[in-house]
Length: 332
Image (cartoon, rainbow, N blue to C red; front, side, top):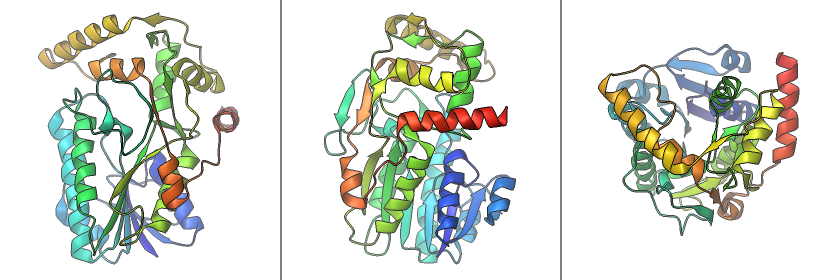
């Protein structure tokens, strides 16, 4: 089958491309740049911008399915940049599916669409966990709009599904782990609260597998069509155990210190103001959204994904750490 993967050059996108190529599919990846890793897999590169409807439509020509993985992630930045990438980009992908007669669309969402400030989510599922409101960051706000558009697009001509993988990590991670390591080595990493709040995460191979599992079950009228699903390893652990486990695997310093939530939240508010007014480069070291995320329990029931498309995590947290450690030693 001919499949287009938007953002195929990213951490998750590459893992999905590897699985699809191994299953014999013909893959094209839509990115702004070129990636030698995709060339080595035999993935055809298509360069363009998601906000350019014509480019997306041309990239979708001749395709039979789309994995829409590309997005602008992060906890800071102008709303418009997030809107163009996440909302307009997703609208363009949906329109391209319509224009080219594509029947299957797998969308990568995020559990952040259900973020509700300091409200803890422990074992929440898709039915009892509502969308968030009054977001303090552009990323969850725009991803919520995009997810709703994808699910609303499900009909008799186009089957859609949205997956919400929680904190993806593993060998090759170029987003979460490098940031943790840099802050830990600089002595600038602290827990917000005591770190006992439980969270779940997703090893990279499991995240990719969930996407392919959903794709292989997706069809008009299928159980998963038009629905969103939480995805994780299914083994929630404390934030302290999670962060220090990842840091230990890559020989980075452990986190010992902590700050109260109120202090972190107030600091985040002040830093956001400073970054807007001055303005300063990069991201603030703390924001209100990150303070809430770090201090609050967030873990989800993944039984719906098992029921509707057979998702069963194959790599547990400890095995994932072993693989990460081995990859780190080899790279060093």
